[in-house]
Amino acid sequence: MKIKSQKDFFAGLLFIVVGIAFAWGATNYNIGEGARMGPGYFPLVLGILLAAIGSFTVFEAMVVETEDGEPVGKFAWRPLFFIIASNVVFGILLGGLPAIGFPAFGLIVGIYALVFIAALAGEEFKAKEVFVLATILAIGSYLAFIVMLKLQFPVWPSFIVG
Image (cartoon, rainbow, N blue to C red):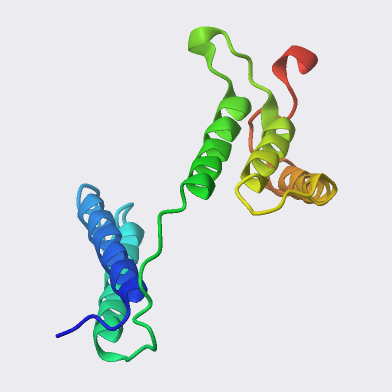
C-alpha cells in the first residue's frame, strides 16, 4: 500500500508512539476503575485515545488521495530552537537555579521572557504586539494561578520582595 500523504502518515506515527509511551508509563501507577480512578487511569486512557487517533490518521494517510502527496518539508530549526529555549528560560526564571546562586525572577518576568523569546521563532517580530500579548498573558496568569487557584510560587523577583 502506498503512502498518499507523508505529513499525515508521520504525524500519525508520532501520535501512536507518544500514546503508547503514555499508556505504558501509566501502568507503573495504580489504574483503578471508572468509579475509583487511580493516578494512572487518566494517562492510560489519554494514551490509548492518542494512539487510536494516530492509527486513524495513518490509515487515512494510506487511503485518502492527495494532490501532491503532501511531502514532509525541511526541518524548521529556528522555530524549534526558540520555542524550546523560551520554555527553558521560563522555568529558570520562575524558580531560579539555587545550585549556582541564580535567583528566582518570578512569574511575571518569566512570562515576559517566554513570550519575547518565543516570538523570535516567527517570520516577523513586532515588539509592540509582543509586549501587549505578554502583558495580557501576565495579568491573566496572575489572576488564574495566584488569585483564583492560590498557588504558591514566586510572582516577582526574589531580590525585590525578599
